[in-house]
Amino acid sequence: MNTRYKITRLDEAGQPTITLEESLLFFATQPDFIYNDSFIVNKDDVQMKITGHFFMWQIDEVQVPFRFFDGELFVAISHPAILARAHDITAALEATMVEG
Image 1 (cartoon, rainbow, N blue to C red):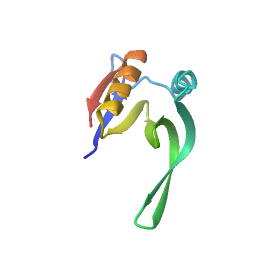
Image 2: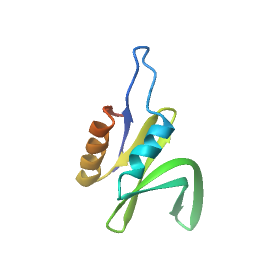
Image 3: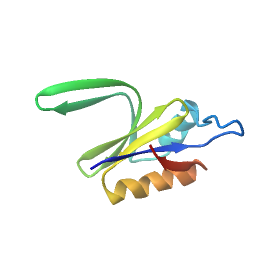
Image 4: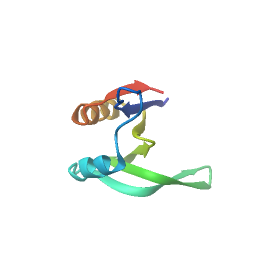
């Protein structure tokens, strides 16, 4: 089962402060990530395309989307390796990671 987490950094007013530009610069330095402006999900012979800002982490044959939305990064965690990578990203961005 996947648990959704968000990587966030808040200002004094409680507003998210991670920018798309900061995310693009950060993930460009990560050799195991690529940027996509959409994410395609295939299930039961149905294909759904979600537009947005996705930083795709390649681990073995699986791609894990980290989605930038409204000043935060979202990721569904289903494996300890994904959790560990999310913690690394959180620390590098001087952010916090919370469930939700």
